[in-house]
Length: 129
Ligand code: CTP
Image 1 (spheres, protein in one colour):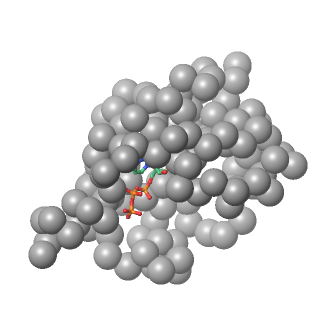
Image 2 (cartoon, rainbow, N blue to C red; image 1 turned 120 degrees about the horizontal axis):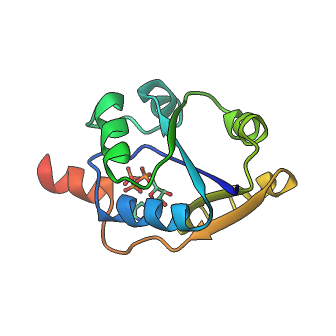
């Protein structure tokens, strides 16, 4: 069984998120998604997340593409998870191109083309002017 993992905040869940998860799932048989805690996001400078972690998890789950959801709450967790869950492929959007090449020591790394013209940031700006 081919296991895929991806990570994200998934705030104000949108079509770009849905398409990312659909294509990540299609890379293998079993998709694990790491959803970030508010504390972890704040520690990396993402301070304006709107949805609670429970809402973000629920939205990821409701896509129907995801087999297991975990929580990402610290630096260095990706390598731990890849080893713990026996991951074959790490997938992430192309806005991260190059950033996760270091994971190639542990599994395949795939950058999926980001869906243009949509992001949580754009929705936050439109909704909360
Ligand atoms: N993603 C995507 N296409 C988009 C937006 C996001 O493929 N238009 C992907 C990201 O590349 C990442 C995953 O969805 O792999 C989760 O991204 P996240 O950072 O939660 O969403 P963004 O909309 O990019 O959020 P923000 O604007 O806050 O950075």
